[in-house]
Image (cartoon, rainbow, N blue to C red):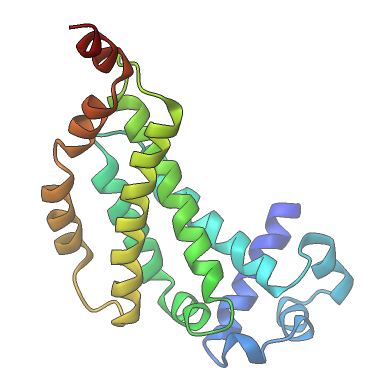
Length: 193
């Protein structure tokens, strides 16, 4: 029942965003649109921004299901673009509001989770420090999120597949090369020579 109510609140928020900007929507508006009382809203979320964040995470989780490997990361990123595009009024409204940071936080977390899985997969059998793997994942996270934020800022006009194809050319083989450069077992054996 809890997830059903949360999804209903999300649907009400998205419906209201088609009519007015986020900073003009109140919890009363959402509760009224959803057919619940304010206290029910507060049972599930502390404020509207908490609902926005939950909504972003839910959409992202669905987009990335089963797409966290080196062979499927492009599909995962494409599905993130498609999820954002499918929720364009919601994302654009949030992006142009005071909670733009929410969109960025959501994209950073989502992208990092995808990239760290890819990095861990490619590091299998190598001795690479965790902080170096995190650094590689962070690098790609910032690159991807930067591209996506630029795409959102330009009103999502460019075809997401074109962006992913161009990104794939840059990424191809570079995660493995980076991991190879950070290998501690290789560096130790080289220093003994």
